[in-house]
Length: 320
Ligand SMILES: Nc1nc2c(ncn2[C@@H]2O[C@H](COP(=O)(O)OP(=O)(O)OP(=O)(O)O)[C@@H](O)[C@H]2O)c(=O)[nH]1
Ligand SMILES: [Zn+2]
Image (tube, rainbow, N blue to C red):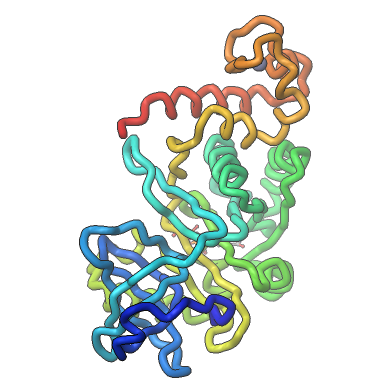
């Protein structure tokens, strides 16, 4: 586990205080649960940060100073390969660090919204994280053709769609998903009822036990379903396959995105960027706007341009 991440020995180590490295598996307020290797043993440690800092996210690789057998202080955070934000009123807070791919779980039933799918895709693009769509409940044959058709819009943009049936065909579901997950840190998101928990339970058979351990350790009480948590798929091995379960459909925090980042997060805008009459075109109402022309010509889906306008508006409302 996290063996490629070798922290430099700090003052504490020189002073003889035991140090460890680990990965943050859950966060609750300023309390964190960290899976760490201590003298070759994989332990869950209850950790706090120094002072009022709380910029630690699930998935962070951290340097620890041990304060007791199962407690430690987070001294520093390893370099992040990616960072996703969640929205909290008109502010963005940290959702997860070091994610390498995002799986958006949708289903034949109940219905899902395109707005939320596209918001997740924008968050993934902006963070440099790959995005896949998982279509669950393919056993509900009556709604399958219509759902497939709706997802074509995303397939055309180049997002892979994988069909599974967590309850109907659990073995095939594992066989489809496991190779995609291997050595990746995957965050699963989905609207309520899409089958995200069913999928996680297939991949991480003792997910429920792990969740109970986490809520007991962090004393989250009944808030067990409202926090993000990370599972190691093959604990105790060198393999770094992580699944991150994010509660409900956490709306992604997109307020921190600049206009330039937003337009690039819509991958189908790319051929038209830089081709507008005005070099600083916002692609809203400007004359001779290449993006607006592409919408007119059916090269950009109106619902995607609508969301771009909405996100531009939302990011101008930020209350920092
Ligand atoms: N027919 C069918 N039902 C499924 C399948 N997968 C999950 N379900 C059912 O769909 C319902 C929702 O599944 P969950 O796994 O709880 O969904 P979730 O996305 O975690 O939902 P929340 O817990 O509300 O976030 C349950 O009644 C499951 O039994 C499937 O492949 N086929
Ligand atoms: Zn334009």
